[in-house]
Each structure stands twice: as C-alpha cells, then as structure tokens.
Length: 109
Image (tube, rainbow, N blue to C red):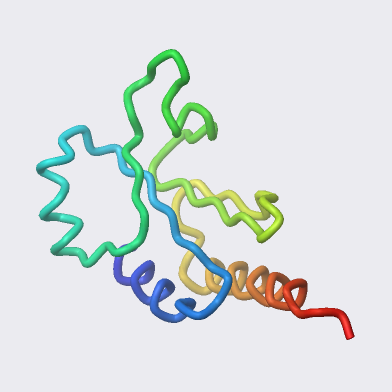
C-alpha cells in the first residue's frame, strides 16, 4: 500500500487532505529505517500496547490490519474498510470528500 499512499500524499499536497498511519510495530528503533526506506513522510503513530486508556486499535474497534478510515473535513467517518478496497475505490471516496471540503472552504458570495 505504501506506493499508493505516497502517490496520494503527493497528489493531494495542495488539498485539504491528511494521511495518518498507525503502525503495530513494537520496536520503534527497528521501524525507523523502514520508514526512511519506504519514504513514509506522513504522520504515523505507534499502536501502543493496551494500558489504562487502551490502544488506538482498541479505541477505534480495529479488527485487522490494514483497517482504513476516511474521515471528512467535519470529523465524520465516511468510510471504514477492513483491508484495502482497491486504489480506485479509495481514490474516488477521498476525491469526493476533498471536493466537499474545498466547496465548504470557499467564502460565500
């Protein structure tokens, strides 16, 4: 998925879009070279082991990896996929919501 994610980040660089990752790697030092090698430039949070507050995957009811959420500019989850829906479906969902965000951001005439 990294190649497609990289292309999305590049394609949407001037749009109201953010890609945020959550990784399940336990050894952050071992992960650093992978992030560099894969050119992962977007935010990626570590899914901390369960504690008093719970892990990110627990809080978001993640049942498997990857789980993809598409959240609109108002903070509403519009899509949730367990596994990849395919690049075309994901792009279409994102493009639709980016257009809505851009439309809402334009000043009223």
